[in-house]
Length: 465
Image 1 (cartoon, rainbow, N blue to C red):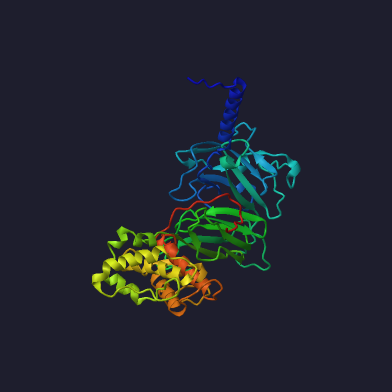
Image 2: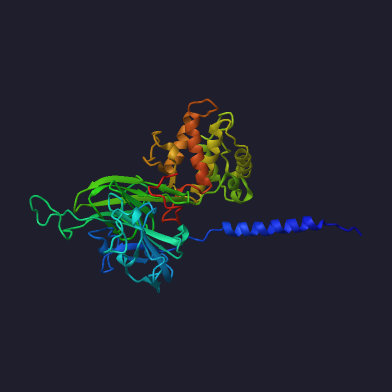
């Protein structure tokens, strides 16, 4: 019998390394982000997205779900602080006070908190030192912007924290039309930005009747006068109360790569006092549409379905062989077995030395998909490579129906049967081939309703991938 000898020191060292690696692995597993949302409101605690106030004492803190149907802030007591927009200067905090966690959520409902009840931060970084009239000092931000933080930890770490920005700035509304215009103690009206997100089911960049709103899509609003705020969409849309200024509204791009923007991802505009501006973003997601691949139509399962009518259809097309000649099948219905064998060999041998051959194979598979009812010819697929090509039926956003795609592919094969490397028509045929390939593999069909989505780090303004 063989005896395996192990060096004691080596064994201890290996166990130590294993233990340390487990500690590091555990440490690297970050806590999930805190669910829910916070927002500033007025003393009635009924307003949402007010964002701008006449004085610091007017600002109250509330919270709940980020949008209808989402998780609320978890029940518990939270630390609160107010800072400048960068977070570098603490203007007021609950940490170290007699009640360090004054913001309480019970049963998913937050108890409204006046921010002036906090304890002032050091005055050195504030605009006017320590404010004896309110529990948070004046921001140095020239636009009067502040950031409020709510956290489960006193260090206000990212994944344990929710934030919201707000402004304290007098209104300059005129009531009613005095000359000259002078500041008023109460706003005569609200200046608002209303943001909507819709599912663009027909991919035309316009919200048509029956196209639903998407709830929970992240966007942010940036003003030229030192204002930035991140929100999520509601249904019906909610409006943010803001100051007169020039603004840009950005929509975020989800982590899931099957989403496509069908409108601009940002809009810039200027608001005067009492103006309202509506912003609408459209998106659509891609996925399966019933496609079956070359592999299916060449194997025994696909061959069982292939009929005399299928081979008549395929022969009527301008399908091409590797050398550019016509790919025809026997006309007699008694030759179905031989035609199935011939199709199997032709599909499995397809390659892109002559791009027309590879395009022919993908077109044949899609024609069979439609003929047998697996794919609807009216289904839309995403083909951004077709934008600007003049292909009939493709819209300006790159969406085209399966029927129009097959027609375009067949027309190109009729006109250009041999497209080797260097041929000027090769790139266009490759675009058609890739689009059909993706459809046969169920990757690029426009879905009838919104797909799941999520977002990464909140870095307003967002940058699209």
